[in-house]
Image (cartoon, rainbow, N blue to C red; front, side):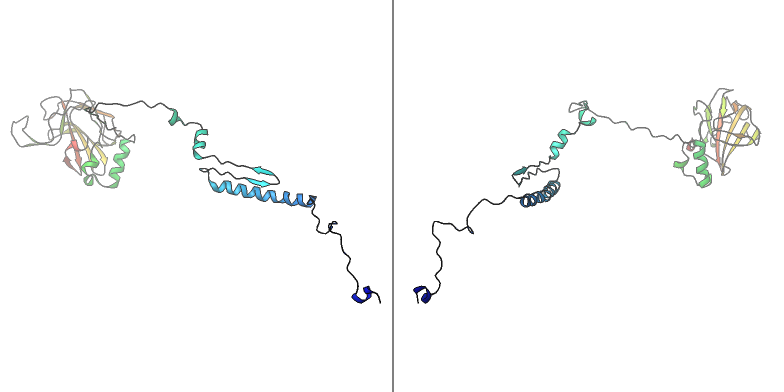
Length: 272
């Protein structure tokens, strides 16, 4: 029996100089599969880039670099200051505002703008009288409700107690407000309404016209030289109804104007 038979089969030896093909280093494969994987990774990175840029807000700068297959991407989000600089200037920014200067001892006055209404005054009066009778209207509500009975309203003898211009006795109660007017001056209705009296007044009023404005409010016009309306006639505010005079208990040409609420005279100045 040979030595090989005694000790069994001997392993073949590999010369040291012969490198093993199994562990031999070499270049990594760059096939289509690798390129496909990298191409598939790029869209996800792009989405991540967009999300980071949007999350940063317009007031920040986000520099995002993505290295994929040798590709570097950088995105910069403009700041708010840059956006304002790029935006067109507004009119308020570009308009030249005048400089206002004043010395330390200057007095600056401010005028209050007048507030008015263009509403129909007769409509206001009708609305006021519809809410309640004339007797329930307050002084603040009645002020300026009636219009002028003359183009020029020049007060003379006031409403209330006075010395009688006829008898000279004190304590006479004057039932209305007198306005100076030459005889023959046009007398106008102070508000729209219905004529309830047009004729001679037996208690000193002379030629007299009474206009009913509804809900207990009436106006009377006295000492007229003549009148141009009749009972039952509808008149508008400002319509000419008579001419001033000095008929009845009068000492000269003027208009005696009265306001009656529920049959009782009141101060006409509270309604004019």
